[in-house]
Length: 523
Image 1 (tube, one colour):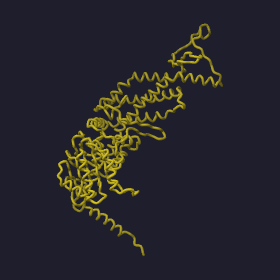
Image 2 (tube, helix red, strand yellow):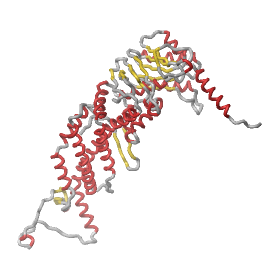
Image 3 (tube, rainbow, N blue to C red):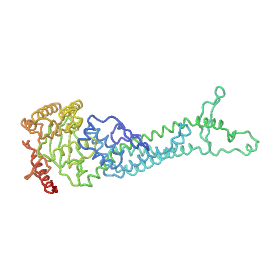
């Protein structure tokens, strides 16, 4: 059985394991190059925490899925349709996730026999399969109740599979087998005599129901149909021998049943990961709507189209940390491969950059985004190059570190990728830093890479602006009179100042207040 809730034609490649001591862990293919920088630069752990809502497994599922971007708009649309169903019927998605979680946890709670003896394996498998059957029945009930309400292909296919494969006859047959394998009337095993009168060809037999000896046999007038013997209470060797006979007879059944339970457990694990992604999306949706922030289903476009446009976009991570609603921004960067963002300090430049990066990642894993409207072409990869703190070991300066990271990125960036720069290459003087940045930006654009660059370097921004590039869009953070920041960005060329004096006056005013309230100490 396959869930196919994340991909229409394949599995995710992820696997979830659980142990009572270590808890849950998710493993799978390596995350894309630069995933660690994305998490740090876009502050993604804030959003992952909201998606997990205290569930460590959902945190890992959300992290893997968010950072493993889809490559085709059709794949994005497939997940979006399933997410719409989950948003319309959140209780259904959450109940399925709870069932799969219970299956994984309760399976680990069943005692594992020491030494893996067939009789112990069989006994454990019977108990585990009994738990699984009850949970599969609950899944079938959910499918029967909700099959007609779901609109997405993925959910309809899942519910159809559950209804067709998990029939009443299927459950009746399993219940009969499980009851029989409990061997309440004893174990019946047949064997042949082999070389040296050793037993061979052991076969576990189905118990004969209501097999009673006739009265003539019981009083000795008819031949015996069965023969039996009893062990002495202290016959340890005989007891071990009978135990070995029992294990040999049950070996094939134990292996078969263990494989069946592993198969069903594998289905629960796979479904847990796939429905878990949508459960985490529901958690994030609840957090954002509770804050009054808008969300929308983005429109993905092929990577060959340089599409980027949004209305009311905001930084989801900042919104989750803020007590108030954020200011949204609008822009149309269709057919643009370079977006330069300049303007007043603390005017919302970096916030907008993070908002676009998060929206791109959220779109490319099939999620809604934090905006009133968002459309973008699917990127081959999303990368960040944000300013870093200076190396504490003093092994290298900030410029060396900037260039080293850029060199690593260059090995991974491909055609139709997206790179977000935030105050990069500003560790040297403005002329040299601007020249370095300008050459890198031009090389990336010529290679078919979309570049979004936040900078305070007027030389860099004015040089590119003066070239009147058709594929470039320049945005500038607004500054009202008196230094007020509206956190709105609009189209506009760079200015020779970032209005740092506003911050100076702010800090100076704060220091003046501190000085006025500082107690006087006699010399």
